[in-house]
Image (tube, rainbow, N blue to C red; front, side, top):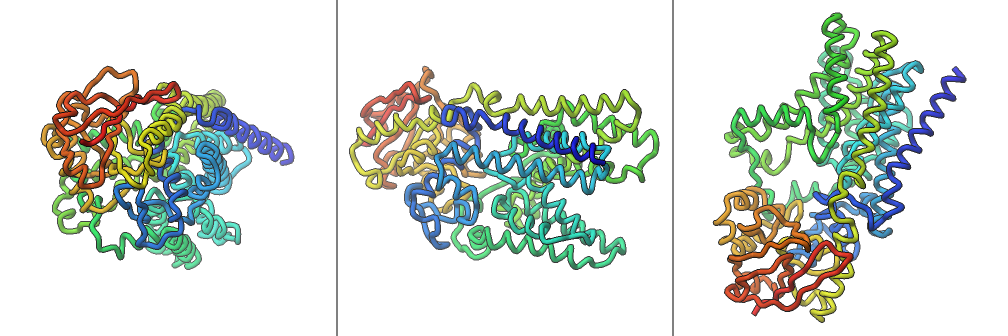
Length: 557
């Protein structure tokens, strides 16, 4: 027993050192690090900075932040009760980013380890599988601003199962009370808590009693989330102003495309909940399922069989949420379009890695050679995830310094020579998040939701371009989260680097509407050859060795 405890401690320390090594590029390189652009640099990191300097961190539910779209609702941004908001308010961007990554990955490791040790693999014999699977789970390339929305689920499940089994203590309730301050209900925990509610109901139906403590714990965590996310609750329940999500349209896939998407998601996962399971985890779980099937061990391995089935069902649900067969219901119940119920698949990281641990144990029990195979696959999965480190997979993307190009945009701001509050800019071929991060007031933006009236007004500026390109027209009209100056020539390409030789030859931008909205300057990542025809004049070209952009500054005539 003493030796097992020492072995467990050594493995845990080693795992934490691996996590530290994984995170080290963020702290060593800081702004010279390569990190995710999509739904990260192009949005959330800029939002945190805009919110921090807006003075509206604690603004009321009707407050607006004028730096975006002449006044974006304060409720569009995260709650002031979220720890991640405070990290970016108190620390430089990359220090905050590194701390956030560390909090999330260490919490993910601890949560999965406790869950496996207590409930899924409750035997000291499985120490290696407990720690190895927990480490692999903690290294998954999760969506950074999701925080513990998915990676905190094992910790929450551990606490819920303790309470369900009558073993709940103050620490379990403390876990349930603290997680909402570093997670999002719409990015994971709405679906997790719904699953817990179904779990409780199944217990009741199966005659296991009402288990009021378990029910109370679910209600308790839900209540904490409602308090933390009060802005979201207010916007959803009490706001009467239509917003961009009221035109969101999701049910468009024909049946066979939905089937194809089911298997694509099952094998490759989703960008916001990347699990990197296709190469090693999927084959291992299939092999384990074969052993269970061939030896008729359904009862002995009912948890594994349940998770195996649930994993596929979640992919099926995700894909068929976009099936056009939902149309009659979405027309009748509008909330089915405004709320993304496909996100039940955000449960998959928990399901996949818990299944992985159980599959490794099933293989381990097949004999010595299979035990060695199980160990090897656990190690291979960890090594594979190491190769998915941001510094490796985003090596060809700009660094944080190159992306936000603070030196370059300071030069542009100085050249314009006015207080940024007194003029508005919009961008072409570059994310609006870049000028927003640098303090410019922008007419374009990328936000979760914003007033629908603004979307319609902005559309008049780009309607000629949308008419020429079906892809960007559907993208803007049926979603519109990216309120960008889309062009038919560029399509959905909005990262034109300074080495590009492209030119915009026939831009049909309604500059009259642009000026009516307060626009004075266009920040274009490429030259506009017909600028004079649309009443724009080239003011100056800006370039810097520390920037990935070359900015053509156009001014309205």
